Amino acid sequence: MEEQIIKIEDVSKQYKLGVIGKTTLKEELQRFGARMKHQEDPTTKIYQGGVSSEIKTGDTFWALKDINLDIRKGETLGIIGRNGAGKSTLLKLLCRITAPTTGTISYNGRIASMLEVGTGFHPDLTGRENIYLNGAILGMNRNEIDSKIDSIIEFSECGQFIDTPVKRYSSGMYVKLAFSVAAFLDAEIMIMDEVLAVGDVAFQQKCLTRMKELAAQEQRTVLYVSHLLPTVKELCSRCIVLQNGRIGYDGETSDAISHYLESDIASATFLDYTGMVRVGRPQRQAIQLLNVAFEGKDNAIFYDDEFIYLKLSFKYLENSIGVSFRLEIRTIEGRAVATSFKEGFLSGKAGEQQSVLLKYDISNLVEGKYNTVLTFYYCPEDGNTVNLECAEGLSFEKKCVSTKEMIWNAEKWGNIRLSPPCVIE
Image (cartoon, rainbow, N blue to C red; front, side, top):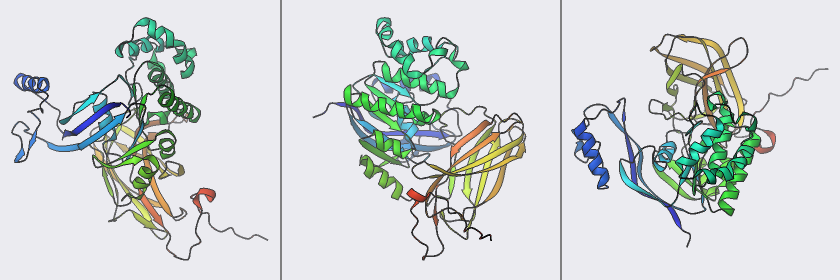
């Protein structure tokens, strides 16, 4: 029987919405005593009779509920699910960034993680110095790191800039160096969030190949989160689907992906982003997306003769003039098929909340299920786009009006159906 390396038992995680936690010395002592006795936190517990009196303000939200999971040594486990399903929260619990509200997580190995761009790096240190810092955090001595540093630098493709402070690195360079550190330093468990999407396509493939080698040859355990389902299928032998904070499916990767695709992906017509954990860092934080909705719909199924009315609600974090918006439409597997831009039409003052209703014609999309990505950005005259906010949007299903439509082979012909041509003599 393969050795168990991670065991998750009855884990749940609760957050307070709209409240910054404040505690007294008494509460901190109570928390410390509970941790020492491996008991639940008495200051945040929800009792069956209602909310504990210790919780004085704010609503609560269960990001994860009753998670049980056994992960074996050398296993490559994919974690998929919609935005807000609990994927990032689960990884943060596994990396001990935050503690579970209830339940226990036990490990049998050291963890190397990459949850967002720049995680574990000190911006004022050089790339080389950060390699030694990360190695020391993992418990390695200088000689051990010395024996691996050349391989790390070569794999990262950052050799020319390795003695430059990482605060001057692009997001792609951050990712390359961070992955290389995680892949070559001695850690039995690798935890990878979807930040690999920041890197270029060639490096993504290089990373996937390296992770497969580590699992097969060195018996490393890999936990991988991504919305790019083809990469999950390529890398992972097992996959779980998170749905509303619970495990909706646990099994072979192809079956898990089928379960995810066949779930009620086209039922949601509203998404709330107020509690969203933002993966990666926008180049400039000037806008916060609050919610998005398909206006006037009780489901997310659209026909040829329907328009999408997309209502966006957001908050300005700073005075802003001429903000643009981009909508990307992707297949459920993550392949981009269409993009719409609306430039320079939004303006507001810091702290102001605003809503806008946008109309989209999707009649040329063929039948299928699609995801959306929402991006607010500046497009200055020099052409260097500056992203202000980016998030996964609502999913929808497109259907044709006529049942006599020819069966469209989207894999060969694509997802956009052009209008018939005009015959010119």
